[in-house]
Length: 43
Image 1 (cartoon, helix red, strand yellow):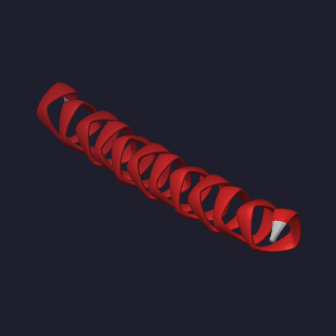
Image 2 (cartoon, helix red, strand yellow; image 1 turned 180 degrees about the vertical axis):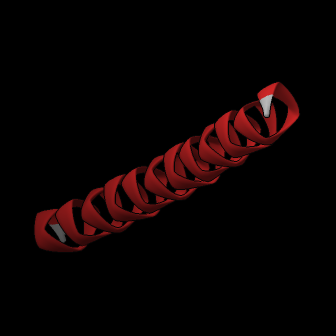
């Protein structure tokens, strides 16, 4: 039974880390796009 609990915790940790990574990449790309837009506006 304890092994099943460990699997569930591992799955939750994996999903959380994947979600955080996804949000980070999304914000990073948004920041890059914002920089590109600002560069275009400066020119």
